[in-house]
Amino acid sequence: MFEQLKTPYSFRKSAQWLWRYLKNGDHSNPTGLKSARVHFEAPEIPQVRLLLIGDLMGLSGKRLVFGEDLKGLAHSCDKVIANLEGPITESKDLVFIKQYNTPDLLEDLDQLASLSRWVFSLANNHIYDYGLKGVEQTIQRIEASSAQHFGTRFRPVHLEKNGALYGVTEWQNRQSPYPISLEAPVFKTSDAEFHILYPHWGEEFCFYPSPSQRNLAKSLLMEYDLIVGHHSHTPQPTEKIEERYCCYSLGNFYIYFDKPMLSRGKVVEVGWSGGNLVLFKESFCQTQFIDKKTLKIDLVGDSVE
Ligand SMILES: [Fe+2]
View 1: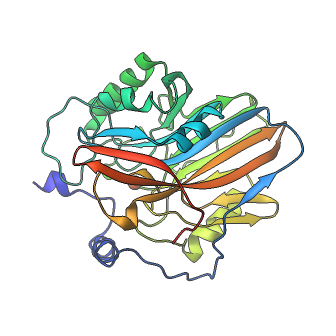
View 2 (view 1 turned 180 degrees about the horizontal axis):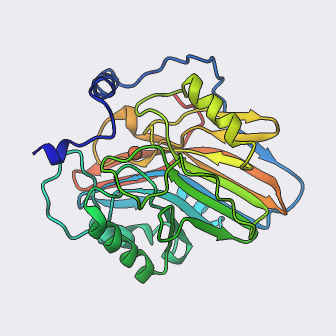
């Protein structure tokens, strides 16, 4: 039973986590960061167009369908980058906080974009919920499907044209050396001119970043050209710092249970030319329950709240 309850947090932090969940999120904004939809498009044509989406939460066997607007957006992008928040495994282990996906997840995602266009970051607090075996099964499934992955010691970086994506995590429910840690030294590759950090970081159920996270973003943006984060399960603002952007959290791409606080997330179109960002465009998506076993995800209006 205790195995099921493992979290990366101290007792105090776990109590705060539960409190934020029960009161439908923490909407306090300790640094007064403005919330606005960001749309930046330079005249140059991007070398590549990516769609970065947030957390794919463990579906425990539920199925996905996608709306036409979201399908159109995915179709217009070369690749879809997502955080796979839980392994793809056949395990029938008792589930509480653990996240897992059944193999039909990949079949469902193929309806949004062909699997050869999906790239999954495995650097998050749940990827090791079923141990090394769960990580290995997940990688085998992904590779057999023609999708790609990054964010672990097996493959830390994803290269796309002359850009690089780095999946890193601040948190792990079960300590393991496999997901790349946010605390790891900067390991920028020389094979790319444009460097995107895709971190699993910050506090869950918060709608704004903390002062320390904003400071961290500032120092990380001295190394990386762009930060697009996740883990909070709620969409957080994007900040422009010295001509570079930090989207603190995309929130969920979908969630497997019906809770309005968690049902809306951001998706971001990103493109670069040489070493320069030439496209950064945010939209919002929402999960809707069609029936007890089926979730529909589509684009929605602009407002965060
Ligand atoms: Fe997470």
